[in-house]
Length: 134
Image (cartoon, rainbow, N blue to C red; front, side):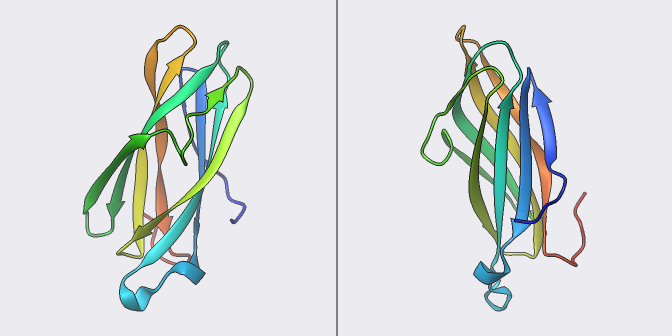
């Protein structure tokens, strides 16, 4: 993955950072398939542990087609993140267009049982040298 400044959002002391990267070797533009990887870091700057229970992704391609993906946890886990700790994982997303965007939220529960959504910042998926979505 390339070393770029991450997209970042903070909700209730939970910071979500995302670094997308285009995967040319897994993409096949002739077949209408472009693939990106993204690395997510979730940092808990709060005073109590939080657990990531579920996710919601909103994926938009360059034609404006929107797909919403929901599920329990991330990469098969529901990580518990202590105060001052962080959790990272990598995943990927194919698109039928050479650009698009993703955004969403993680459904979190804190040590008192309070539930809240930690914002996943909107980030662009763009083939290097292509146009950037805003």
